[in-house]
Structure formats: structure tokens, C-alpha cells
Image (tube, rainbow, N blue to C red; front, side, top):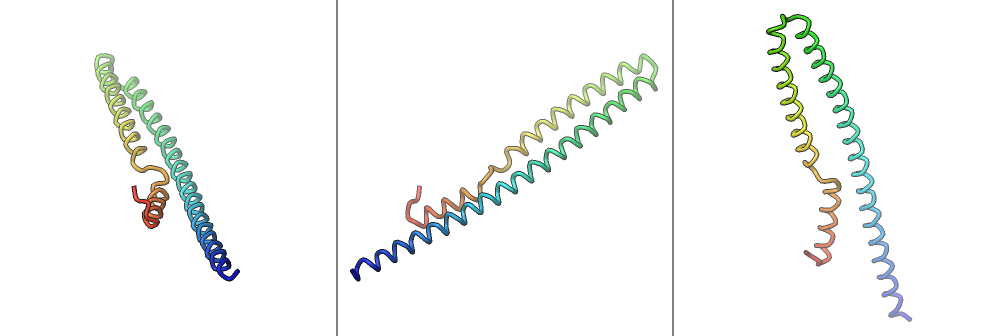
Length: 124
């Protein structure tokens, strides 16, 4: 019976360590989820504010050009404004796509899990 007790104690110790590691990883996951949620909410607020301000500025500029200029010049200015707004829209779309592909979610957690596997000798 004395040989079984150290094996059972080691098994309990190993199980306890495994549970502590699992708890730590779950806490890391919860933290990363919270950070990701805050980042997305901030970006959505900024995008909404930017969109509203840009729309109002563009509308005001077009209205000013339509009211302040004589008809021959008005068409040239309105055409130039159209091209400017299209270019600004395309540029902002490209910047948004680049910023969305910047960082993978849960990259720290995945890296930590890889380190855990490597420390156990299961490198891939």
C-alpha cells in the first residue's frame, strides 16, 4: 500500500497543476476577449464619428460650391469634388482593410499554448 500512495499523490499533484494551468489559460482568454471587445467598440465609435463628420463636411462643401459659384465654374468644381470624394473613400477603405488584418485575435494565448506544448516536449 505504501507504493500506491506516492503514485496517487503524484497523480493528484499533476492533476492540480493541470487545473491551475487550465485556469490561467482561461483567465488569459477572458482578458483577451475583453480587450478585443473594447478595441472593436472603440473602432466602431471612431468610424461612426469619422463617417458622420466626413459626410457633413462633404455635403457642406458641395452645397457651398453649388450656391457660391457661377454655372460654368460650378460644374468643374463639382466634378473635382466628386473625384476627391471617390479617392478619399477608396483610401479610407484600404486603410480600414489594413488595420483589420493587423493583429490576429488571441495571438498571445496561442503563443502561450505553443510554449506550453514545447515545454512538454511536443514541438511541432
